[in-house]
Image 1 (spheres, rainbow, N blue to C red):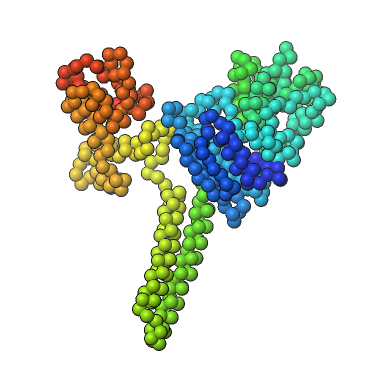
Image 2 (image 1 turned 45 degrees about the vertical axis):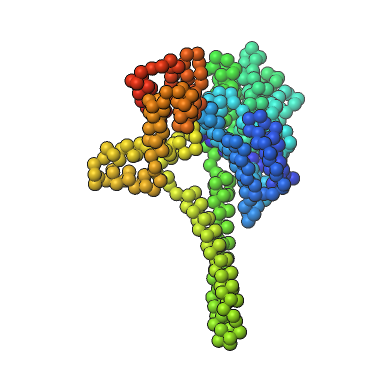
Length: 473
């Protein structure tokens, strides 16, 4: 996964509901990210799933923080996108994290890509803080001797107040821009502010400022930290303005990808804190109910001594309190399990390959471990470790059963319709193409084979079964 992490000050009138409504408006208005049937009623704890998309909203009331997590799995592109928002309403800070899998990083990091429209929507609604010299915009700031010149002067002096990178573009000796400022500002909306000298004489005035290194046809990236080294790009090193724009985008993305967030600034951190708070509350309830039980037993002893309590009433009181105690204990144990899962260090980390069906990658790994276990010597350390992992993960030979069913379908069936039906149960799709049938594994064209419609001998069917099992299962 590649990540962009942005820290954005918000205007003082923005509250949690504003953030939620903006995210929902983005989802409802998007053809790609759309989630049908969302029915949000103003609550700050909300979960919804639609097809391959999930939305979760939680609130950490003790710190006045709202966290939103949106995820979409794109099976055809074998990719995943994650958009997270953590809003600290007290500090008026919004932490945004956008993650995209390496399978599609070319759209985001290698080329001229945009962030999801929700960022632009926040800009257009004026949600980001305006208490700075420059604020995020979808348009460039054009510099002339009469307009915005003071901003240009402040940026080259290093005293401009800004919380996102500023890209300053000068014109070439032919009075052309080194990179198209309008297009660049649109693509970098939310990630950087673009300033462009519309009047070439602006540069002549600015170069008189001590320490200024503005050159004709250059793009300079100034970062929010005044101590950061600025990035200077020369248009002569690129074949055209588009390639230079791509390089500018790469540097801006690199800046945001290096930002580090703490537990108050990430979805996972807020979720973990929320679980800890709930667990603490349950432990307090557990202690209180235990104390009530102990007090009840004392009262029962006294009442039994005085013959004032029937057996039925005594039993009813005991069962009521014990039931409450067990319920709280079960809920506490469930939260502890979630916390353990969040903090546990996995044996293996997930890569970028997307699952073609739920649990596929785990099944493949366990299947490989089973093969290796059979090849390992009895009593060896390797065999014991493999056996332990297989047992702990509930291995039942799922893929082996599918391979056997493929062999049985191709070798033992005479009807093409029956074969296709049996293959479908193993996850293999059939598509008629003339005198052949194209077979693909869960619709993924990388794993395909061809089956002839004409009758074939036993050996051909066996070879096809072997090929399918090797490449798909």
